[in-house]
Image 1 (cartoon, rainbow, N blue to C red):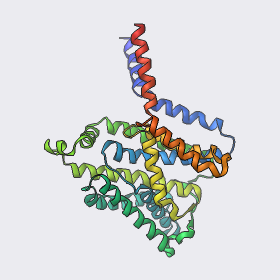
Image 2 (cartoon, rainbow, N blue to C red):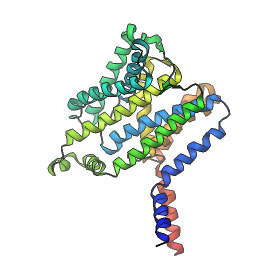
Image 3 (cartoon, one colour):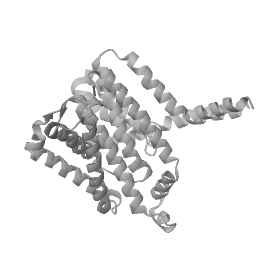
Image 4 (cartoon, rainbow, N blue to C red):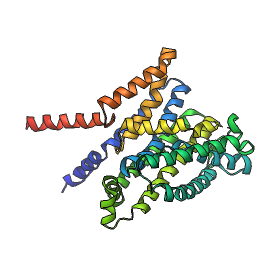
Amino acid sequence: MKNKPTNYLLQTINSNKEILILTAILVVAPFLFQNDFHYEIAIVAILNAMICIGLNLLMGYAGQVSLGHGAFAGLGAYISVILVSNYQFSPVFSIFLSIVLMSILGFIISKPILKLKGHYLAMATLGIGIIINIVLEVEEDLTGGTDGMSVDSFTFFGYELVDSLQWYILVAVLLVLFIYLFENLINSPFGRILKSIHDSQNAATSVGIDVSHYKSIVFVLSVVIATIAGSLYAFFSGFISPGEASFAHSIELVVMVVLGGLGRVYGAIFGAVILTVLPQFLTAFEEYETLIFGLIVVAVMIFMPKGISSLWDKIVEKKGTKNVTSN
């Protein structure tokens, strides 16, 4: 009887070891940062990881490709900023309203485009993303056009975030929260339905699953997460431009997910961190920076087609093999 609490604690730690490791890394990381630039890179990496978590849910688990999530993040951010700048809403409430509006938009968009498959779906999301980007560039009275617009400071229930450490704590807590919710969602009956849709939509339909309904829900969830992360980035940087909703940004997010590992809970984080941090180390190569960056990405995809997170599987597998051999 005395060992039951201890055994339960050990089982809890073992079942949540990945998220505990992530939390520990996020806690220790600030002690290694030497200036605000390091904080900025970390914050941007975390915000990218948040978007990729939602995108991974859509692509890796539901099997639906989206080349427009950069545009959704940018549009959601613009809505939040405009509500604060033009209508004097609080930043938190403006993000909430942006989530509501983007959820409605995402649901409306999902109904027709998610009936498509493969490259047809990819082209549809690409077209929507380009339309959003053009609208943001043309509507100069609202968005400032290609010149962008400045963003007011972010206040959180009357408390203004003024330094990088405060921002880091906020986004780090949100990342851990999203990962926790993500893992519980994937391990729930809803997650198993998504996996069945990913494996075979026809088989899922044959057992009574409303495929269209579940795909729409996942699409809306991914748009909501993109809206939150995009809005926070706009308030953190103090400036926003249509470039945040560009096709290049959408492609970058997709590469992050694929590089990290499709259908892997922590794959999105690996991909986002690597593609955000790596360019900073390559700046010393000047004009060869882009070439080297591309070669690294290609090499990873050739030698690790399942993403960087597959390395963790190999480590665990070797460890398990050694344990079995020793026993």
